[in-house]
Image (cartoon, rainbow, N blue to C red; front, side, top):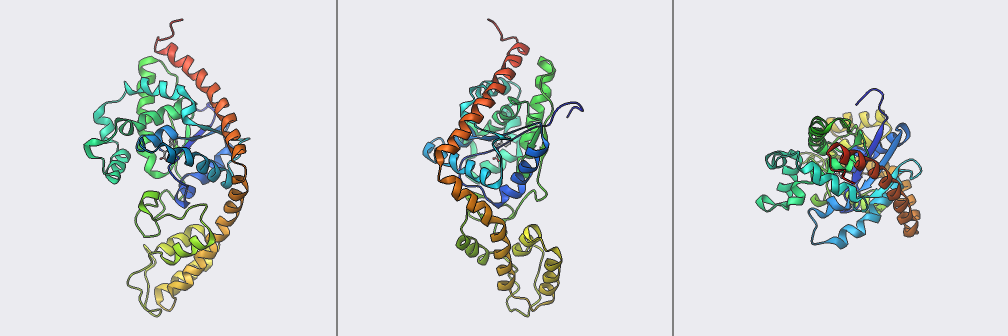
Length: 336
Ligand code: TRP
């Protein structure tokens, strides 16, 4: 990032479901911090991107626009400080995507590790929708229409940002410098394991604790958590590494000393899984209860939430118009 350039933050969520703890530690926490430190801050609900692998299910995307807005607002995103908007309402993003598509090759798109992983997970193979394969290009447009330069994202998105920077470099080289390079900002916990101990918490993996989960849901999920399969009797020595309960306690329990003591005791033997699970339930409840309560309050007035998005979209569109004027001029497609 240039020395004298302002901090312009932009981040986004696909409205395919409610957000979970992985989103919080990977990105939302940074969004909240950066909305205070930045010159401008944007949050996009990426409905077009969500449609790239849900073309046959627009109802799902439509419904989750509100859910994702609620999750972010409940966590503390402040519409006075962060312009919240809906991707599909900014046609300039689509326009910019088409222009950026000339700057990437099919081979490069197929090599993107994030896209490759997601394609495998979704079982696409060669039958991948072209829109899905190209989503890193449209994501570059999501970011650059607003001239954003700091992007809070989960670790899995780093290759997408890298590809966006290649687009920035090519664009600036071909047409003159318009865009800054982009800096991803990954949370202190770049990747949160799922409750089943698999490497990533994800909706489609069925191993997530949602920001909106009830106390009962949290309790049930923690009680089901993967610990140490070798820790059968209370008096057996247990393993702390790879033990999901301890991984979560390390992240969410504020009393680090107590966690350290519990770990020692668990390793020696004599500490049952139920005791550490009960502690984690308490810790997560303390963290999630205020978010859940705020969310329930906000959810009573969906039209107010939609108004926030409408106002934000209007502001975002102003930015988009300015950027497109510059882009058209640079590419010499400013005829009249
Ligand atoms: N691909 C992101 C995700 O799945 C969502 C997203 C869309 C995004 N557009 C963005 C993130 C722009 C940052 C910037 O999490």
